[in-house]
Image 1 (spheres, rainbow, N blue to C red):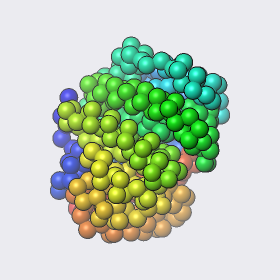
Image 2: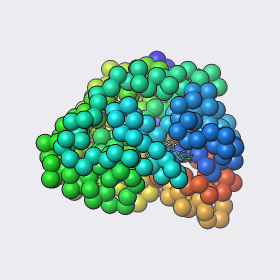
Image 3: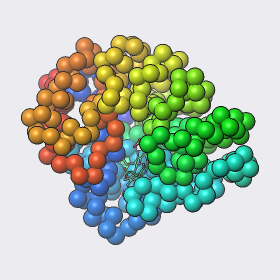
Image 4: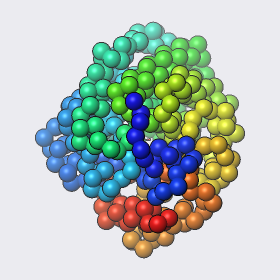
Amino acid sequence: MGMIDSNFIDACYGNNRGTIPIWIMRQAGRYLPEYRAIREKVSFEDLCRSPKLIAEVVRQPVHRFGLDAAILFSDILTVLEPMGMQVSFPDGGPKLANPITSPDDVRRLQDIDVDKSLSFVADAYGEIRKVLPDTPVIGFAGSPFTLMCYMIQGKGSNNFDKPKQFLHKFPAAAEELVNLLQSVVSKYLAMQIKAGANAVQIFDSWGGILSKDDYLDWSARPVNAIFRSLETYEVPRILFVNNIAPYLDILKTVDCEAVGVDYRTDIADVAAALPNKAVQGNLDPSVLFNTRERVVERTLQILDSLEDHQNLIFNLGHGIQPETPISNVEAVVETVHRYRS
Ligand code: CP3
């Protein structure tokens, strides 16, 4: 379990003396023609439930670019379906047919047996290991607050006003919901580790919209409880926070090996504020639409800004976008891999 020789894993623990590792947030996806070819034949929902196809789309970017880590192909919302939420992706974006609007809706949700209801995810790890025997595989889940955002808003949003209001209108029901999600996500990540995940990442994509007090109560606290429940597995735990800068003092108290840094934040500031954690990030995905020269320059700017490269995992500062030119992804990978050799 979890035993694999890799610069990525070493960097998570702050002791990588080799090539700087890189993987790309949302690396399997529509910017790749080989992914689009599979999606022509199968819906996103069906793909997420097909272990062999999952392994194929996980493999594609790793082999194309020579990336240092793979990530499970799934969605943060997959875990919500067996809990009783109706999730679909009608035109790419998520849509929940029965959003949570009241405390009664929270009571109707199911705690789940992850081994039973998400067995296709465990099976996917077996298939991934067959096609990527030596590559570390990252397991993932959404943070309880980020999952709540979609459960209550019912779809994507820029400000998620409904979930923010729910926290203050129905604090007892919100606490019930966050506790249920904390328990389910803990079990789900433990299952992924037992099935073969070599590291785990929690995506806190929307915690960054909260005031500091609310971030501590509603996001950092449950995330920390989840990470602590996973401590015994001895795999690196990564927390990505989209808009991390306001919460650096809170993150000192979160038990994880690495933090993912969004593109708005200065990654050197995060490294300085959290000296005992590795940093992952944080090239702005939009920069990949610029010229190759500018892409290389911005990549080097991040690399040069850091004094210590033993604890760096290079990545984008949020997900790669569907129309991204592939040659610019190659330029980033090449620049990162050459930097220290
Ligand atoms: O290689 C990978 O990283 C793919 C696995 C993956 C997906 N979603 C597949 C996906 C991962 C790690 C996610 C995480 C995810 N999903 C997050 C956290 C990361 C972030 O962006 O902040 C969030 C918020 C979601 C919810 C979600 N799912 C959104 C907002 C969307 C639509 C936007 C988009 O990027 O398309 C999805 C759909 C989705 N999830 C797709 C993929 C490949 C597109 C579906 C398709 O192929 O048509």
